[in-house]
Structure formats: C-alpha cells, structure tokens
Image (cartoon, rainbow, N blue to C red; front, side, top):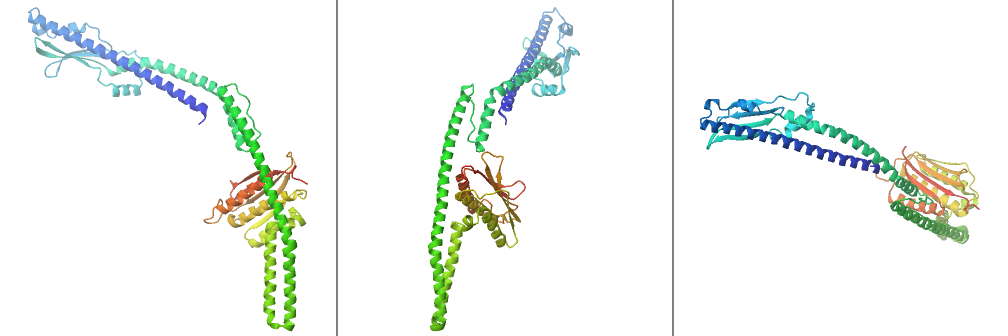
Length: 456
C-alpha cells in the first residue's frame, strides 16, 4: 500500500476511535443523568407516600386517601418519564407519565435500536414504601428509551458532523504535508528502480532532512562502489573470456597444423600400404584398411573438436557467413520440425576476432538450447546495429515460439549453465543480457553491447 494513503488511513482510524470514545462518553453521561433523575423521583415519591402514612397513623389524614396521588402529580415529570405505585400483588395502583417532547431531534432508527439493545431498562429506579416495618408497595420511576435516546442523539449528532468535518480537513492537510515530506522518498524509490534496471550512473541529490540526506549519501557511495566493482568484474570477465578464445584459437591452430597433417599423412600411408598389400601380401589388406579407417575416424573427431574450439569459418569466411552456416546446420539436423532463420542488416566484419567469437558462441548456445528444449516451430535469429545509440551498439536476439517438452523445464540445469556462459560473454562485451518467457508465448533472448572499444 502507498505510504501516504497508509498514514491517512491510520489517522482516519485514530480520529474515528476518538469520535467513538467521545460518543460513548456522551451516551454514558446521558444514561447516568437519566438514571439519577429516576432515582431522585422514586425516592421523592416514596418519601412523600411514607409521610402520608405517618399522618394517617397520627390521625391527621384518612386511610382512604392513600395514596394521595394529587400531591405526586404536582411534581414536574421529565418528558417521557413515568412514576407508578405497585402493591404487594405486583398490580399497579396509581401511575403518572410526562408527555413526550415532540419537538426533540428525530432519532435515527439504527441509533434507537442500538440504544435499546445496549441500555434497555437499566434506567428504571425503585423505592420500597414502608412505615413502621410494614410494606405498603413499591414506587418505580422510568424514562421512555426513545426520549433518552433522543437526548443522547441531540448531543452526538453535532459531534458527529463536527468530527466528520475535522477528520476530512485533517486527512486533507495530512495528505498534503505527507506528500511534501515524502518527496525525497519518491526520488529515492526512482533511484532504486533505475539501479535495479542496471543504471549504475544514477545519483541522488542532497536532501534537507538529515535522515533522507544520509540515505542519499549511502546510496551514492554504494552506487559508486558497485560501479567500480562491476567495471572491474566486466574487465576481468572480458580478459578471461578473451584469453579463453585466444587459447582455443591457438590450440585449434596447433591441432590443425600438427595433428591434422599427421593424421592426413597417416591416412595416406595406410592407403598406400593397402594398395601394395593387395599385390604382395593380401593377408595384410584387412589390417591396412582398418588402419586407414582409424585414421579417417580420428580426422573426423579432430574436425569436430576443432569446430568446437574455434570454428575455422569465422576467420576464413567472417561472422555473418559463419552464422548463416550455423543456422543451415540446425535446419538440416531438425529435418523440417523446426525452421531456423537468420536476419541481419549490418556489416559485422570489423568486429574484433574475440568479439565475433563471443557473438557466435552466444548464438550457438541459444540455438542449441532451442533445439533441445523449445519444441518450437520457428526460431529466429536477428543481429542488427543500433545507429542511434552513442556509442554505436549491436543488438542480437534469438526468439522461438516453443512451449517446451513434457517434463522438460526451460529453466533446467543444462539450460541454466548455458545462460550462465552467455551472461559471462555478454559481461565481457560490457553489454546487457535479458532472457525469459515472452508474454505472447515462447522464449526470447536479447543482448546489447557497444562496439566503439571493440572494433578493429
């Protein structure tokens, strides 16, 4: 959740809790005051009746006049308040009620229902009437819940309106203050997002608040250090991968110049022996033919090894033609199940030999992964130059429309190691690497790298 709205929501909840607390206090005071009125009325009427019993006992009054309710009715009853006298049998002997205040505030039904649920008849007050130890009944005073609820609502309603206005104003002012106070947080978040996208050149400005300014200082220091470490790592990776390619090229040249020539000579010698043996020693023909086949097989194995170490066509034919031959090989191997295509609009012949080797290896690994794991109908390789970029950059992409094979995850260990190797080569090129499933389906790989420092 957004921090600004979280703070506003919490302030609103606090304000609501304060309003509910105030409303509960108002309701409590209303109930306590109403119960006090009933208790006072019940006591007053009870004592008045006890006084009449005393006069009757002294013969200054007659028993038939008990209870003298005319005296009771002279007391001022509150709106909705009732007082009654009940005999020993529980029957009401006399009662009086004050009229309802029709001009009072109209109480909402939900408030009245809640009031009756939580308060109910807890406001009633009783007073036993007795004289010389003899009970003469019970005086009960009560208030109509609707009238008491109306009194409580008349106090709470303005409070509710005032609270709503204050809460709305408080939320608005708080939001504006928080938005202004958290502007540095937005800049920090933007900087973190840029850093997550690989922009090591982003820096945060100095902030007025010491806490945010400290974050800015630490962020900038970490970004500087991360940039240095990344640059050193890229330089080291470039040296390692370039050295690896140079060593591979050296080994391939040595194998081609030494072992390949000797195997070719051995094969020719075996063929000569077989020819002579056919005339002079027929029993040696089989051994000579076997020796010839062994030499031919060793030469084929050596050619595969040379191709793995350093495709000769990169040096002889150039990068573009080598990639076309590589795509043609995959088309032959797939037997029409998958169509591999290669598209390019730029000349790549001025790239350094190591750079061309990196590009070739990346595409070679991507095509191998697509052949093994994609189960795709189409695999497209694109290699283009981005002229609008400064420095000039090259973008290559390998996209397939595959869905993967049953039980074969595109993120398997073999594919994972292949991606790691490609990432290292892209790092050696000081480029950017992205690979993963596409929203439209299939799998995509994209690499961008500069050429200014890599061209011959």
